[in-house]
Length: 118
Image (cartoon, rainbow, N blue to C red; front, top):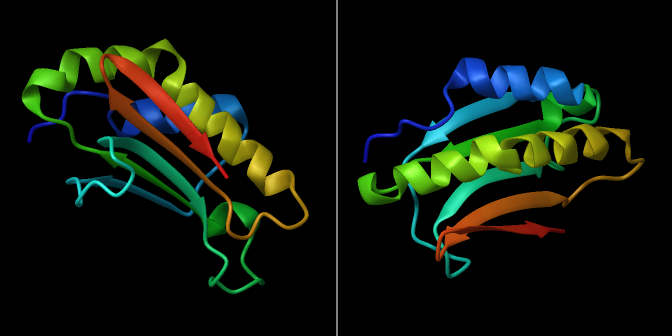
């Protein structure tokens, strides 16, 4: 599944604009769909990582590949605000006193982006 959505530079620019960094940025091939919809972005706080690490080092951002047919729609959804929203969530999560277990997932279905925060 080729991905023509945001590249590393675009993701880096979105993180910078949100005022945050992540410890890990990965571009991945989809795993089995656990949420019922294909995943687009997944931002999570790693509680198991040493507390001595900075908040940004404990954040992981994954950008998932999408099927060729979905690329134009998903790329538009991400550049239309989805990527910025995920990065803003990442920035806010580092400011929380206890963000352990926190996660923001963006999925897509029916031409729409769905956001699950928890």
